[in-house]
Amino acid sequence: MSVNKNLASIAALLGEESRASMIAALLDGRALTARELSTGAGITAQTASFHLGKLRAGGLLTMLRQGRHNYYRIAGRDVVAAIQALQVIAPKAAVEPAELDDVRLARSCYKHLAGRLGVAVARALEERNLLRCHGDDFEMTEAGEEFFAEMGIAPDDLRRGRRQFARQCLDWSERRPHLGGALGAALLDQFLMRKWLRRVPGSRAVRLTTAGAAQLQNRLGVRDWDR
Image (cartoon, rainbow, N blue to C red; front, side, top):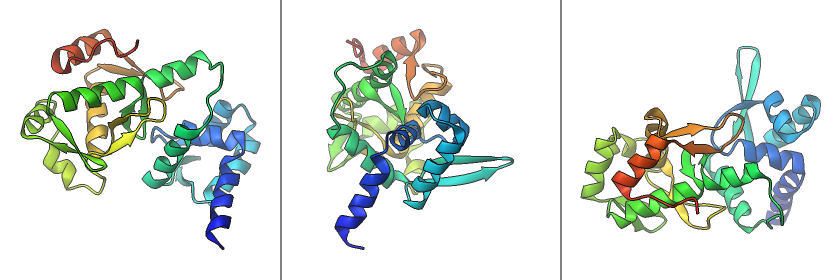
């Protein structure tokens, strides 16, 4: 199969609105059932199963069977990066629902913090010389090693893992990088564990708590990020 045909086959998979909706619902790294995905896409479970089969055959999704349920998730980080790149160039609707506004403000993106808040946190980490840009990645400074250790994160352990350490992930809504990779995932875990953020049920959106707003302002100077 030629390169053009390969590209066309992927474009055809994502060109169907229901399939695109289900892919978008999985971008935060969670695994969901066909019923959960069908509800979000507004289609029947039978129709969702058909589309999920297409996405699996095309290499975009994998399926994990646990007990009586089949769980679907995105096949890998390369797929996530490709979908996010498409979101950057996708035309924006003239009128967008309130839920999308929440997702753009703050959301989980393949297990790291994205949206306007995610970009604000990444920028603050740079401004305080805790991280610095290094090619397509972030590089941790000596001050950063101390900061993340105080947050309960062990950078050396993350570096030994298989996942990229600290990726500059281009945010599709803000067009600026947020912190991705293993370090971004560990930071989001800490924010959730400390109850600085809380998840919005049935959505990729997350919300900053009162305690979280105070902590991010005190520790990183993050304020007025939602204006």
